[in-house]
Amino acid sequence: MKLPDKVMKEGKAKVIYEKEDGNLLMKFKDDLTALDGLKHDQMPSKGKYNSVMTAHLLKLVADAGIPTHLVSLLEPGLMEVKKVEIIPVEAVLRNVATGSMVRRLPLEAGSRLPSPVIEFYLKDDALHDPWINDDHVRILGLATAEELKRIRELTLKVNDVLLDYFASKGLVLADFKLEFGRLGGDLVLADEITPDTMRIFDAKEFEKGRLVEYDKQIFRDGGSPEDIKAAYDEAFRRIVGEEPPF
Ligand code: TMP
Ligand code: ASP
Figure 1 (tube, rainbow, N blue to C red):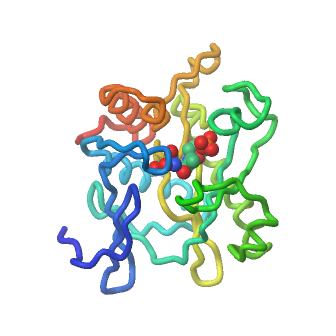
Figure 2: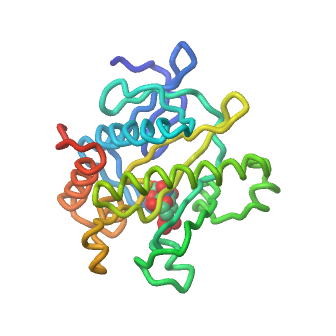
């Protein structure tokens, strides 16, 4: 499909265009970034992998009654979405302690948390997406108390749906990041759900105490291009249920 000439916004992982009817086109890039873009590389067809996985997972949560921005996947790599007003707060939900949580708190990497933990981060590259609390969200005027309550509620609902789904695919959903947008007086789930934005462990290995993951952490940790490709291949197989055709 031919893309409009004018780019509305370009981020690290996607380019956004506006359609004439007001919807948006999200072109998923093949770029891999970490550490606020300091670490940068490419993975052939990554945009196709991530767009197909996002559309698959957004449909799954939409079927469970959670509103999302998805209109349709037009082709691998290109998704049509509704235009929403993005709230610049990243909602991270954790089922397992890992990543920045174990760098910050005295918890063992890979330990299951007694109940899900939700954290908020300010979307601001220059400030390295700082961890913020409800009061910070309020004084920065990022979202109302009511919206924040709704974000928590929707994030927990998404977790309920995805935890069960991933478990049925032999995966432990350790953590993930969501973004929400305002649309017609309510909030909808926006952005992507991909191995870039979550950590997924092999369930069998996890039960044996070994952390084998199929996500971008392998890139963050300096894995080889082959290791990264193998992880995205396996994530795709488990999530979509097909051999990646790209
Ligand atoms: P963290 O442990 O590094 O804080 O990451 C928690 C989850 O959020 C992990 O699944 C990766 C995801 N994430 C993003 O999607 N974008 C980000 O900018 C960061 C820091 C994490
Ligand atoms: N902070 C994000 C990550 O590591 C992406 C980036 O820093 O470029 O997931």
